[in-house]
Length: 281
Image (cartoon, rainbow, N blue to C red; front, top):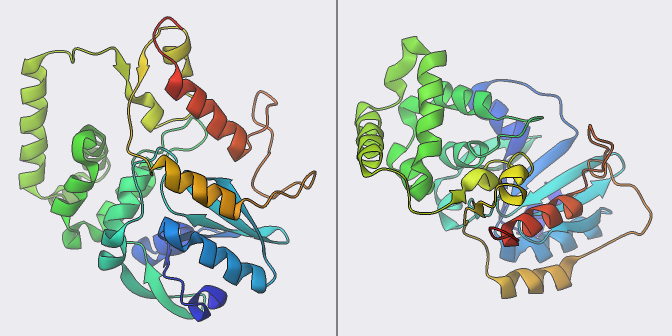
């Protein structure tokens, strides 16, 4: 953090540290999540390299890492599904905090909820985090901005709000009534309209692996997601990729339940391959 602050790199802290700042829930962690604009990643890498870190662009769509022994920093400029791109709105609504003794910004609670709402893997589900954030901050949140963030994916927000109301029946009012009314209206309108005229499965937006069957065996089409321009991603990849051949990295390449490694590059390749599949292919 000191290196980034001294270098003048704009960033926000997210992850376990921001979650603690908002909810008071402590989690032991050996990594630091830093959110920043994609254009600032080269400067952040240079600052961290001068401080002795090794850096690597894990996936040019959304994340880089900086390593120091068995600890590491995640430099995140989007979400893995391409929806939560860090933009000026994040910084405009970020909140001041003191993290590890440094005065800095933490990511806005609305944007943290937006990113966590789409994490729905077998081994990780962030729904409880979403509930805790709403319970702690719901009375002060900008719900209009959060709804706008979800855009056409408002059903994901509605699903989490329904679960929140189940978990905390004595604090339902922390979600404004107008929002529940609006989401119910949309749901009824959608129900009356019937099925969408497309054989689409948007499961890829909430899980990288759990809906592969739908694409490979059932021939459903992957749901589209916003992403950074290809040219910009390619330029960033060429500028930043640091690969130390043959050296294991903490936090990547760990074997999964089926014995396969879970490295981010392979995961990204799986998602990209699924994205390109069409019915009958």
